Amino acid sequence: MTIRTAVDDDASTIAAIWEAGWRDAHLGNVPDALARVRTTATFVTRARASIPATLVATSDGVVVGFVMVDHDELAQIYVDARHRGSGVAAVLLDAAEHVIAASGYPSAWLAVIAPNERARRFYQRNGWLDDGDFVYRAATQDGAVDVPSRRYTKQVWTDS
Image (cartoon, rainbow, N blue to C red; front, side, top):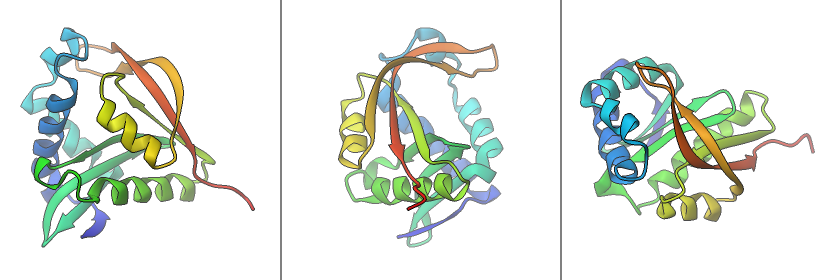
């Protein structure tokens, strides 16, 4: 497996992995207003726009997962269903933590919907702390949608 910076040609694969993973974890667990606007086209548009902030994991030259970083936020992390449980997500998570630390942020944060127990266990196994309930304002083309979530944080950099 290789981790590299995403390129424009990766956008459609990133979008497909993102949409499938998002639907697996979010449908029935987020407000209907958000589910309605998360169409295939929006995943493609968002993937293209996020290429500069995206790292991909490849196996035999094929993108099998990705992570997006927005300043100190781990904004998105998804792995193709055929590669879940293989260690790809942990490698992507570590890479994102390094990007955030290298950008000068001492800690990172992410949002996860409370019903996503699999993701929550994964973050906790990897040293992330559950800081409790908060409302994530998910951006959409129609304005923000409030999504009840859990906020996780991790110290990624120290000066010692």
